[in-house]
Each structure stands twice: as C-alpha cells, then as structure tokens.
Amino acid sequence: MGGGTNIDLVRSVYPRSGLDWAALTANRADEERYLQQVRPLIHPDYEASWIVRDGEGELARSSASFAAQLAALHAVMKEFDRYLIEPELLVDLDDRVLVFVWLTMVPKGGGEEIQASAGTIYVLADGRIIAIEAYERRDDALDAAGLDQAEAEARGVEPRRPLSGPTRSA
Image (cartoon, rainbow, N blue to C red; front, side, top):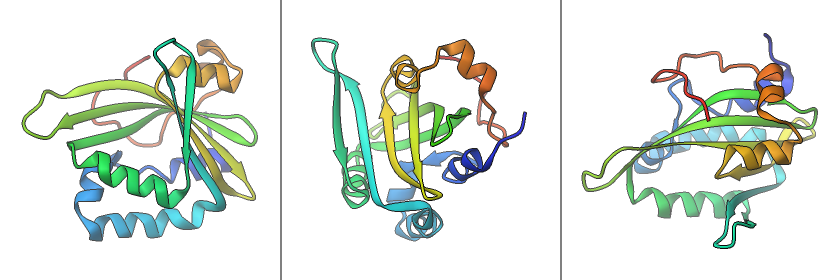
C-alpha cells in the first residue's frame, strides 16, 4: 500500500527511530534540531488536545497551543528516562490522518517499563498540521474517525521504517 501527501506529512513528524520525547527534552540541541524540522509543518492556529476518560467514563478534553504543549512536555518528561512514541498504522481521512501509536515509557528512578497503545488524529489545513487530538484509547480515536478496527486496518498504511520491537496490536 502507498501513502499520499497527508500520510507523508504526518509520517515526517516521527524520526526513523520513533519519537522519544524524554530524550529530546533532555538535550536542547537535539530538541531544537527536531523542532526546526517540525515547525514548518505546524499551522499558525495549531492546537493540541488530549482526550482521556474521566472518573465517570466520559471523554474529557484539555487543549493547548504549540508553545504550551512544549512547556507541558518539558514538565512531564522530567519524570521519564524514556517516552518513545512509534507509529504503527496511518490512515488517511482526507483532511485528517489517524495514527495508531505504541508507547514505551520508562519512569525515572529505575521504574519498570510501561507499554501502551494509543491513537492520535492529526487535523490538516493548508498543507500543515492545524491540530492533534491525542486519545488515550485507540477505540476512542476510531470512534472520532468514524471507523472500526477492520476499516482502519484495511485503509491504513504502515510506517516506512522498522519499529524497535515486533508489531503490536491494540
């Protein structure tokens, strides 16, 4: 399967080895090199949203600008030695791209490695990323995309690079 311009745009956000936010935020030079590559892809009206289930099981959303997102990442990444995000499947949805990701997190202080799956929807406008919607659960991302798992897998393309481990499913 191939990938179109939208897939290629979103794929370019992820370095070949995956996106390790803990490593990037720990090294200002590496972070700045990465941001120099990504900033041209970001629309001026960009907004990041995190969508998680609250105590009652309802979806709760919190949003931030690009600058606020980076500040939050810096604060959170102080708690991790590793926070690797690897794309597993990308699905072109015209003005959006659904990405299934695999997270590998290692807390500071010798904590056990944590692995999880999640979903992110990239919203595109004028050839740039105007928003991301990061879902804690893949099924919530699928609902937001209007797809089921089988449709996503049938329409999706895999990243053009090997993942650090075996391909995992939700």
